[in-house]
Length: 535
Image (cartoon, rainbow, N blue to C red):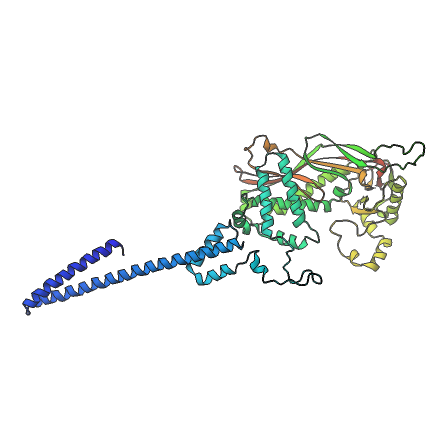
């Protein structure tokens, strides 16, 4: 009851008590007045009812006051418990939604939630004191807790922070720095190595939507989770490209993250074998020029692969469409780069040939090519020589019994199981690492393969200039650089939406040039002498 209602009830009670006194006096003077007696009893009942209602209201007010006091004490205890959990780092200090939720729950139900909050452990001494270490000399790990993988939330938070810096940056130097740091973080946690395999699985299977609130509440001010998902996909397919297209790592490469202008000439250096000189007591050591040669590479290719989906397509499925098409998107771009590289495999660039039909190509053919390169002084160090073959020649080499029979006795699984992840031949053959090249062109020279050292071919890549920096603030999307930490290949990733058409687009772009390197370092493998168009 409100104070006004209680005051009105009190006034009514006093009025009824006054009437009771008045009627009591009348009845005492005239005991036979039945009407007055009836009125007296009615007034007494009403007065008693009013008095009872007043007592109930007073009792309820007292209970409400006590309930507020109890709630106040419970809230103070809950607040203190949550603050203690924050102090021991069991709860992130910026995780305001969780702090408010736990405080409210512990206020309403302290018996249940106060013990739960007290049991939440941080990285402080409370947990450490319960763990007894073993003898360090004989059991280094003992019974200690050893952290082998970082918390996925911490990794995604760091990546989100880097993407936030990239989004705000208008200077390409800053974007480069962010791309390198992102690449280093990817290499340490996501890359498909034996060391990272368990952590990679944890991270790849992590649902970013589940950590959105946590990242926004943590010490990260930029929650670029949508961009983060696209960046990770691009990072992963760059890692895949160097396995699917071995020439990206087997020949001389200049994968700089520096922006360049279209048709700019880049000087790439290839190292050649120096000449041995004899010491002379008269003249000492004869000087010789450093055996490194500049190879001019013109950046005359600027290509990208945009993938666009409209609003109806995106709204009609739960599939991750951009992620599904990402591998094909990157494959097409890398294939165009490698096709341009293969176009340099011509008689004009390489005068040394080995003539052998695809259906006759075997281990002896590989040895003959290796001998020819060795006689020209081409280095045969570990991993230096590469051979790429048209699939028919590659298949015939795989069937060579002189290779299969020894392997069968050692490990039959190498033959019966599918090709290794790097798409290479099962074992190095002679001095070569052999790869199949289904996109190898004939180049009008009956070409079925190519063999050489790293200096035989050159690739130079550059990223386009950030065109959105011309009009700062006018960009309706996100432009960033994505770098593979292993080989250093950097691409430009552009993500934007068109509100008029209701479409979303993801594009990766690259500028590159290719060139023939040392003539003597390469050997064309042809199906027939002369020129022709068939493999």
